[in-house]
Structure formats: C-alpha cells, structure tokens
Amino acid sequence: MPPDSKGPPDSEVPIGCAPPRNSSLHTLWIATVLCVVCSVLVSGAAVGLRDIQEANKRLDQQKNVLIAAGRFHLLGDDETKNTDADIPQLFESVEKMLIDLETGTAVDAATVDPITYNPRTAAKAPELSVSIPAEKDLAGIQRREKYAFVFVIRKDEKIDQVVLPIYGKGLWSTLYGYLALDADTTTVSYQLDIVPLDLYRRSLVVVLDHPVHQPQLEQARCL
Image 1 (spheres, rainbow, N blue to C red):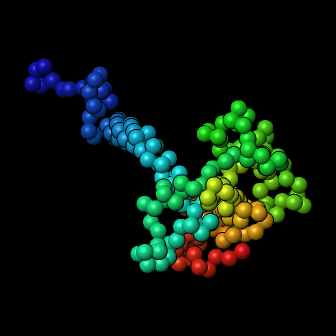
Image 2: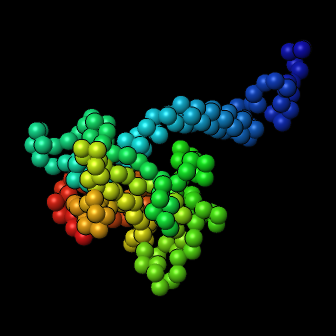
Image 3: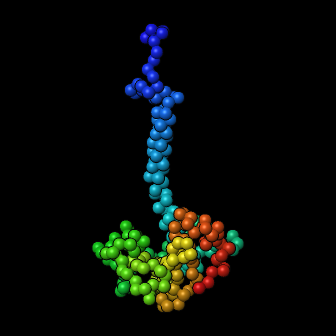
C-alpha cells in the first residue's frame, strides 16, 4: 500500500482479526470472549466438582440423622465431641429405607428406584404425591410425597431407633429436619433437630443473620 494511502475505516473489520481497539465492536468482542471463557470455566468446575458435592451432601445428611438420634455430639471436650471423621463409623448401624407412607411398608425397587428417588421432587409430581386436606395440613405444605426415606438404627441386630424426616413452612422458607423415635415408634427418643436443608441457598441464614444449626444451640433445642 502506498505511504499516502489510508487504511480501512474502523467500521470495516478485516475477517479473522479483532476489531480496532477504539471501536464499539472491540468492546463487544472483548465482552463476548470474557463471557465465553468464564462460562467454560464455571461449567467445567461444576462438572468436575459434582462428585465431591454429592459426597458432601450425603455426609451432611448422615450427620443430621445422627444428631437427631443423639449419636453425634457437637459439644463437649475432645473425648466426647464428635467430628466429621466419626460419621462413617457412627452411621454403620443405620439402615436407610424407602417407605410407603400409607402402609408403612418398604417400597420395592421395581416400584421406585431408591437410588434416583428424590422426595422433594416427588412432592411436586402428581403421580408421586397426594394432596393434604386443609384441616390436616398443619405444616402448610399442601402436598406430600407418597414415599419417604426413614433411617432405622439397630443395636444387637434389633431396632433401637427410627429417624423420620419432617418438614414444614418456616418464617421465610421451608424447614427440614429429623425426628428420632424409640423402637416403639411412639416415644420421642432424643430431640428435634431442625436444619435448613437448602442452607447453601442462604434464604434463611441471611434474613435472620443467625444460622439455625449451631453447636451452641444443641442444648437449647426442645420439642
């Protein structure tokens, strides 16, 4: 190109090249590239950490079941206080079962797959839930699932405790918890341990500015 020739105006973008720096197209180009790169990084992290997240959710559920049954102690000295490392051993005596809430019997795997079954999702599905009459809906949940997981704790091969999942409307969101019963299934054996199941959404913690599930509250919980 001769020295006195002018290059293409900013609006003319050569194919395969980034737009001129001082143009609006360059700003949009940079923003698009950043969005794509960030989306790839976030998606990759979510996929890569999925197994770890699922393992942590299972561990947290097991911990809450043990707390409700009085078998995991948040307070005490080094000898009596439990840590997350104790959960696998403490949970060895616990059997997780899927129960038909109408009959109280175990659900056959051919009817519902216990591995993929999600009670919260089932409560919203018409074929897996039932409507609760208004006069009986003390928890304000309107519908409940047909099947629910219960946790049977055995001692000397006999049923010692049964831990039931419970939930209902709280001040700002739905509260989920576990209620431990003795082997007779009518006597509350320990305490009501209320924890927000969706704590990672922070819907309850941010508003109250005080988590429901704290070690300092263990001795203050009551029915």
